[in-house]
Amino acid sequence: MDLKDLYRDVILDHNRHPRNFGRIEAADGEAEGHNPLCGDRLRLSVRMNGERVEDIRFEGKGCAISTASASLMTEAVKGKDRAAIQELFGKVHALLTHHDAAPDATLGKLAALSGVREFPVRVKCASLCWHTLNAALGHGAATISTE
Image (cartoon, rainbow, N blue to C red; front, side, top):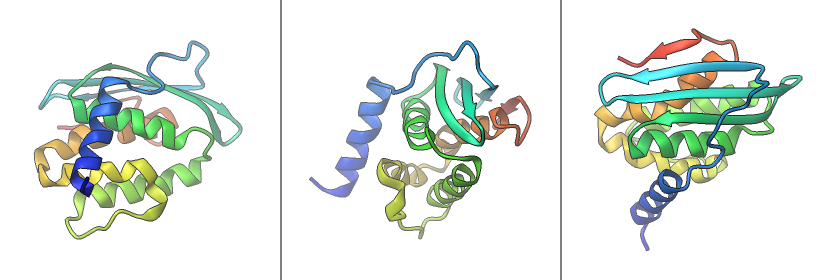
């Protein structure tokens, strides 16, 4: 199996069986994201323990890339502090937007998102959850739109 097949399989698995899907009722932060170009809608809720994300959940409807990216992101950020999440966001953003960026070894399954950059119109699908997380953590608007 080559790398592209592996990446595709990770995206398909996380789309079909999204991790951390649902809502946290007693959330410390919530935000909504919307990508009007393809109709993706996402609601993200986080529970913090100090500076660390103790729990994170998402709900909504979106394309396979949007759903898989949100699922992968929630797995990756759970237990991390705000600084580590910002660093991770920077690495994922570079992976999605720079054609020559090699997947950082610390990205784990998030490296599967590198295939998205071959389809520039889908980059917003993959990054919607990250921008929504920034808003939920207080780094931006509570409702975002990636137009």
